Structures are given as C-alpha cells and as structure tokens.
Length: 131
Image (tube, helix red, strand yellow):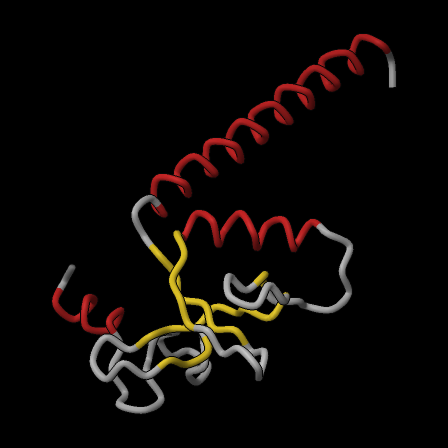
C-alpha cells in the first residue's frame, strides 16, 4: 500500500476508534441514570447466615463489573453485608407473595422476575398495562 492511501486509512481508523470509544462511554452514563434510585435484592447462600437485603442497583452493577474484570475462573458471590463472606447473590422478591427466589429462575424465554411460588411477574404486569 502506498503512503498516499495508507495515511487516510490510518486517520479513518483512528476516527472510528474515537467514535466507538465515545459511544461506549456515553452508554455507561445512560446506565447510571437508568439505575438511579433503583435497588436489587441479595440473598446470602452461607448456611450460617441466609441474610436477605437490598442494595442500590448502581452499587450492584459496580460490584459485578469489578468481579467480571477480576481473573476469576469460578463465579463468586458478592460480599455479604452480614457475614462478610463472598456468598451473596442476586435474587428477586415477589411483590405479591413475598417469596425470595434466584434471579432468572424462570423458564427460558419467560420473565426473570416470575415467582415460582405464585406465578406473578411485575414485568409482565407492566407490559400488559402499557407502562
């Protein structure tokens, strides 16, 4: 490739890389705005603890992102607020019956928040009502 062609190609690639980087970073800003004021439920799987509690969704997202960047070959839970073990995992708490169950426990293609006990799904209810 001659220099007259190579320089515009290199400049074009650098501009494309800058656009991609900007787009990815602005996506994180939208994620933070989407999570503001929201919470997630966690349940400790340590048999001596079993704590169930809520944390801000943004704290959960940051903790999960950090876990994913660590070089860990086994999926570990988050640090439990009560016992301090890496055994807290995301769960859903049914608004209808109060049952606590693993996140995405439902069948493939079903709503992640469908309660295995009573069958209620807030997501499904919101979609049906047009919210």
